[in-house]
Length: 501
Ligand code: GLY
Ligand code: MN
Ligand code: MN
Image 1 (cartoon, helix red, strand yellow):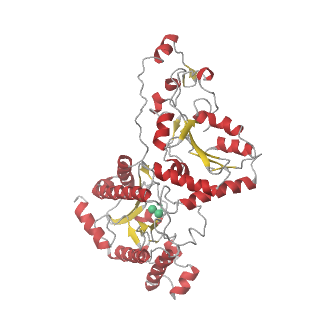
Image 2 (cartoon, helix red, strand yellow):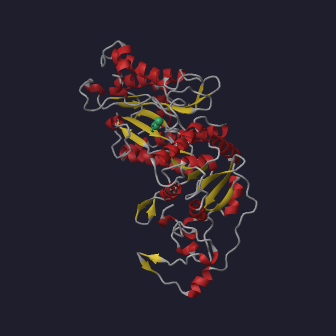
Image 3 (cartoon, helix red, strand yellow):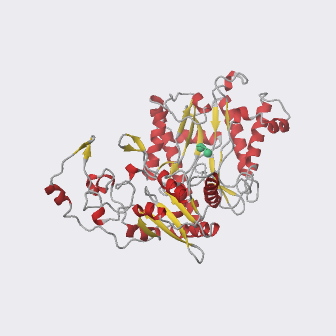
């Protein structure tokens, strides 16, 4: 909600005659609009208000989540912004993606929105969504402002949004003045990092930004991340949809490997992206399409390298579904269709490690345990190959295997790819697994091309296998089981789907 992002400069104008008149500008020059055109553009429009709007499917879940948050912060005002458009260059913006906590609590995805929990005297909160209304036709905003509906598309009216979200909805332009005038004495917290203008207003309301107020805001963020750790049934459904679309995206990639060989890793990224945009909202994170030695760079997102016969292709990609839940899956494929002996050796060790880690997942187990299990299997293999000196207890205690395993074995998954990262450690990293948690299991081995501690035949090989797993009442379920994992199954998959040269 910056000055440029609000048609009215982000400040309440009260509507009606106070509305500013929009002057069309092009390349910094004011454009003239005749009175006749101006008057004509105000008239002749049909009433498109929808009067039979039904609540979105997740409205019952968002209501429960809001009640839970309300109970955690009795008597306090909570401000949860959606964030606004960010400039990419000049007058173009990055695609908008609403802030996760805002989506979690409202089900809304529109830019510039904000949820405000206002405490009742008798307990509980009145929650209001502040949203941008439909564009004003009287003052020309709808066609003369660069973010008017004629340019950006129709928005829901406030009444439509209210019916969709099951919430009281007001014009977001009223919010700054409302907060500025807000009753003193009511403690206010805001989810930071999404709306600098609102943060400033809240800071002023609290008498200036202090370490104490920052800590109180952090407590709100932590509470939301704690709440998001366990997914409800609707969320699990959304994650499964995202995973299923991701499985189709991986199949798409296998079907175009010959074109990728003729071009670059970008062909793979682009192919997966097509699936993400057609079936979902976007990719949930930058696709890693890493062929040959690029696979040893953990966040290889340049994706501009060649895809060569004989290489391993590491593809780490996830579709973010229409409700913004994302998958996070990795497969490492031999571009030729078959692993070489040395590639298979590395692959099979990573696979064994992943199998052991998945088998260890169950409710009540410590979150860190599957990481320890995976690392131990990898360390044992590395000792057997003579890359590390045993015993294995010493290796894992000192973490020596990490030279080749590099990263943790997984993370929570949900609306964010690295979900709930700010949850309390006792609930998360040092907590126990609970039914409804969804996490990734993604061990890997990476031998850098210039690592003189490994035999030459291993240098430049990177393998990761990553799956998305739901913790169930009695164990776990691999949500991405639709993609083969064992080396022989991967080869069979390629033989079936990859076009012959
Ligand atoms: N794609 C990022 C990760 O696997 O965590
Ligand atoms: Mn990943
Ligand atoms: Mn991951």
